Image (cartoon, rainbow, N blue to C red; front, side):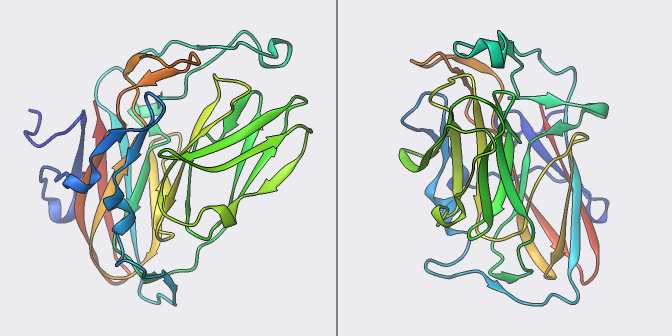
Length: 284
């Protein structure tokens, strides 16, 4: 039976202590249309997961815990129409698959983002994100980083691409990459949390998402829909799942498909010292 508190087709299942409670969807996670049709921007409340003006502090977390789980699709997933290519077809082909919804083995949803809110002190951010223009698609299609994390864009194709990042109506970066193997660092441009919509203005079929979180406690689900976040300071938190949305709502002026507003779901979780908690989410 579907929970009465399920919103926009997703719900969370908290397995802590065997309890199963319906998700809560705080008003500050509501989505609103932005300048481009089909692009929804996280409400400004998402930017306030830590107190205004507070910077994340990196400290040792000797008794850190782990949060794991999966995002799955309930029932048979819809078949999405492939995207028509309108330029450089000798390189890009005639059509490319839509990546708005990728469901793998066991119904796992790839490319969902899971983030813990309200952590102002914790582990050091690790690794880097490379957003590659490869095969006339952005790879990965969904990525996540923390404010101050290292992020680079690369062109692996023998044609001109531009990587245009929009946070709502604001252009965060708009970079031309005319040469193959060209790489540009954009980390210093990502100065605040939010959901960055990434487009290639030269190839309207290309799009991606970059979630910039206020801490390193964020993960993107893998091919099985699984995620794992480590080094969490013991305590109680909200954990939020975000997905870009996959129900078609037409096309914009440039022929890009317009999908529903991104569904989100928020749960509460308690992380014990050196403990492991599991929170699953479900799309439908």
